[in-house]
Amino acid sequence: MADPVELVRRICLCFPPRLPPPQRSRVPPPQPRCLGVWARLRLPSSALSLRCRALDASKPSAVRGEPSEEYDDDEEPYFSVTSSRLSEVDYLGESTKGDLNVRRRHLDALGGNGKSTLHGPIEEIAWKEARQAETLLSDLGIADPLTVRNSPRGIFCTRTLNLRSISVIGYDMDYTLIHYNVMAWEGRAYDYGMANLKSMGFLVDDLEFDPDLVIRGLIMDKVKGNLVKADRFGYIKRVMHGTQMLPTRAVSEIYGRELVDLRKEDTWEFLNTLFSVSEAVMFMQQMVDKLDQGLVPAELGPLDYKGLYNAVSKALFRAHVEGQLKREIMAEPERFVEPDPELPLALLDQKEAGKRLLLITNSDYHYTNKMMNHAFNRFLPNDMGWRDLFEMVIVSARKPEFFQISHPLYEVVTDDGLLRPCFKANSGGLYSGGSAQMVEKSLDIHGDEILYVGDHIFTDVSQSKVHLRWRTALICRELEDEFDALIKSHAQKEKLVTLIQQKEIVGDLFNQLRLALQRRTNSRPAQTLAATCMNDQELTESMQKLLIVMQRLDEKIVPLLESDGELFNKRWGWLSRAGLWDKSHLTRQIEKYADIYTSRVSNFLHYTPFMYFRSQEQTLAHDVHSYSRDQ
Image 1 (cartoon, helix red, strand yellow):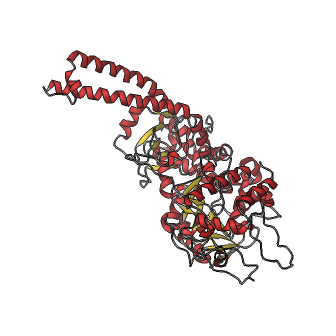
Image 2: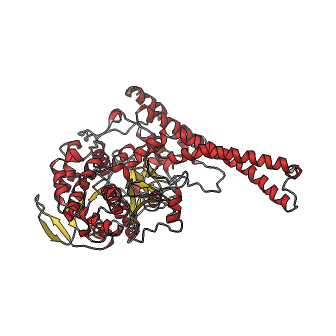
């Protein structure tokens, strides 16, 4: 990293300073919390602020915000923030609320709208500014947004989102703010579930937890006893029955005429979250095999696959409701919770940027308080506690009903969790139950000014968007493993694609010759003079040779295609893909309901609370050029 003094010198050469007005003698204000070298840098504010507005604005005009207080002429801030009342809609359809603007007085001092200080075409100026910005970001050790996006810790955008326009950010807790060790958490859930199955009469002593059997985004067929992976259209690509993967032919015979329809809840159960791992492993790994082998005791009565699924669900439900699992986690949180020191700082940045933060979780107060104390307090500065981050905390929220209907609201009034009925939520409060509509009313904020962040596609993301039109973010920790696996498998993927392209070219020629033979049989000329002039022997020999080439290519392609994605999961392949090119059903759900998605909440720390997330190019089959691939 460059020396801070040298950085200041370089920045000042880029932005010549304007003499400041004389300052009155007063006690200097406290310095804001800074990270790294930024604490030692002082940028010339007038020139830099002008460039911020000139390069970011859709209109070069002056003030769009309203001053909240009166200032002396020599104390007035350079900037104002666009208020809700004065906000507009930009060229991408996003609200300009929260945008930073240069105040009229300072624009006038720089020549009306500041254009006089910019010499030359704006395209050239912007190009130079961008190059300088990249250099300074690199010297400061800060990755630029494009680099961060193309990394395992990136935040990926499916629908353009102006984070500046977001007033409220709500968070789920489990597997969102708190990430659990899957082997430890789900392994214990499995153990308790199996103990409950044993108490029902099932033979389970020889069974062990194997989390690699399943991944998020798979779908349980409760009627046939299968676990399936579907593409974005609902066509089923891979199937496991018990612990056995079925061959492609069997998949086609069973599901060739059937599509996954998640609305048919009696048949399909979507694995929305990592909490589904223990349930799927119990049902698919061992219990289906035992039912097929006739190892379910007769006294349990005749059971089909659906009855078996209900028994497994009941056993896991008892493990959660009876509280055994959560008591164990509360006693040893360090064993189950994976710490993330960056997480509290990411939320602190958002809070200091004026975002009002909410915690909305289905967990009860005692468990929430214990987990949040463990995960947050030791990483917060100045003796802050986790409650200091949040404008409002709602426990036992009963999502997804929290987003759909109203439930009674209770205030948590003691550390022991004593509840008192109330009818209105206030800032700084700790509540149980209630509804999303109550939250909107108490904060006087509605719809797309709220961003909700959670790990459950249905409970958190889908329902908050469908019923309330909140903006949404999905947390999917497995993205980091998939990203790394994609990089490691790049060479194999290139080899596979090359072989497929070669077969396509050879196949095109073979098909042309086949058509020529067909026409010749019916005494019609071939489509080209060269094909027409070939004699029968030349035509037949050429076709035979090409057919052998394609068969030899298939021998290379098939094993590469079957192993594609094995670095992520040997049975199911990629999380986001189904087949070589198509998207998985999980990816389709993410695109439909999540505006942004990422692997963990602390990834926001690598961006800023003022980030403008722009969705990427969605290529179509008939596109002749991809702009995003050239970046």
